Amino acid sequence: MKVAGFTFIRNAVKNDYSIVEAITSILPICDEFVVAHGNSEDSTLELLKSIDSEKIRIIETTWDDSLREGGRTFAVETDKAFAAISKDVDWAFYIQGDECVHEKYLPIIKKEMELCLHNKKIEGLLFNYKHFYGSYDFVAHSRRWYRREVRVIRNLPGMHSYKDAQGFRYNDRKIKVKHIDAYIYHYGWVKPPEGLTNKVRNFNKFYTTNDEWIEETYPEQSAFDYKNADELFHFNESHPRVFQSRVERSNWKFNFDPTLSKNKLPLRRKILAWIEKVTGARLFEYKNYDKIA
Image (cartoon, rainbow, N blue to C red):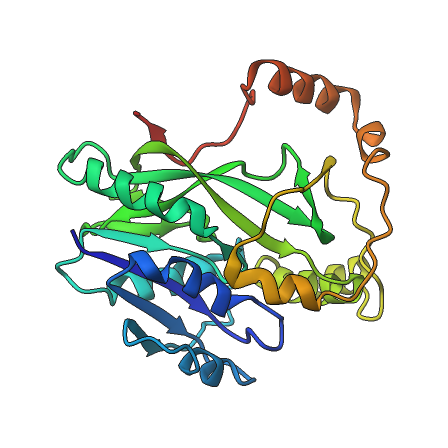
């Protein structure tokens, strides 16, 4: 069995993306790793080259900045990285620049890839998610955020990134996946207030051509208000080893009372959240996959 990791990145230093941690977190179970490096305006390329591994192969790409609707740019760049992996690869492990995998899940993931290797009905592996928020001490929950997503796919012609690179399709149909007992840790919302404002300003440039809306909604000098999570929960477990230095370097205070977040939900979302808590079922959940196992 041969496994390739793949990702895309641009301006990781400028936007404080933890791309090194993302790559190195899954590198132990990858035979190769392809990084599509966009036309950065900072030292991202040097950062990537500093990773000490012969498994890593960097391809240079140029982002089409005119694609400013629905995050389409991210899917285009993902497909460039996927297309560059070796043809004899069996499984391709996709990870984004603000994600990380705890080392305790690597044996589980590798075992699932081995178990599913010859079951051609399974075209991908579905992961659970933990969305860290505000600081490394809290995990957020919201019906507006995905709780599961596909991150391992078969290396098949016709497999491609979908919409804003949050999932995949095979010849334009949903792929058939197995849900596995492993998590992706998402750290995109862990930044000081000023850093999050910068993030959402840059991020939304790939989703809308309305620059006036961006300026009005996220003024350049404003601090992020941390109001887009439904509930927050204390995280009392360990972070991935490769992420420990970032956790130790964090130097901002997250002054938010997680008990208050439960009270602001509209009645409809409170009811749906209660149903999910009691039954485990998330009603009306968007799923860009067909779970068959």
